[in-house]
Image (cartoon, rainbow, N blue to C red; front, side):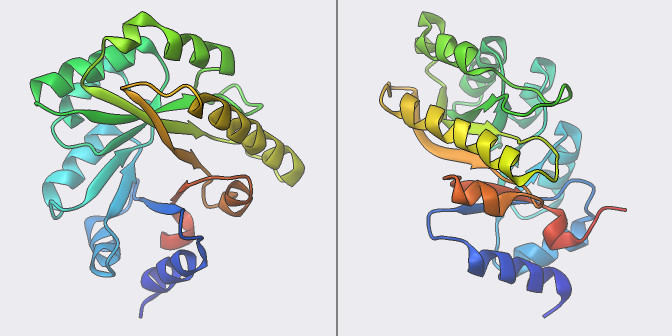
Length: 221
């Protein structure tokens, strides 16, 4: 068993049953991703649309592809035919475009709302109030080709574990609150939080989906 397979096995065997591992493949070559695929794992994520499309075309078609990076409305059409889950939805305008492209492809596309929980300017996302307003809006209720299946958040990049836990905890409380108000296109099952550096803390705080790359492939060059 090579190091990639070993790392993958080590992480997967340590996860609780209710937690899904999404393997982040950004900047990784096709042969390394194929190695993970041959180990039996088929859930992958990319940050950039172009890289996602390129890899989708080159790799087996039973892979479940997620987009986890910031998504511009003009790029939605490229991934709408095949993307399994979009983690980074941060506006009604983007949801409307995803809905439009999903309709063209005769699909319902699953989405997560990205919530801003970090103490960092560079992160995207809705704050709690904006997310609540969006979820209560009549405009959202009209979108029949999207399904909001959960929330995603990124904690501050810091060594301070207490701060990271606090941020994840705040998102879990918000997730639990929203779960009480489910509608036809809002059924919250997924709480996507935690990356290579902090996924253990995220799981302790209730994450059901983690996004891990460097802990499997090694640090990016």
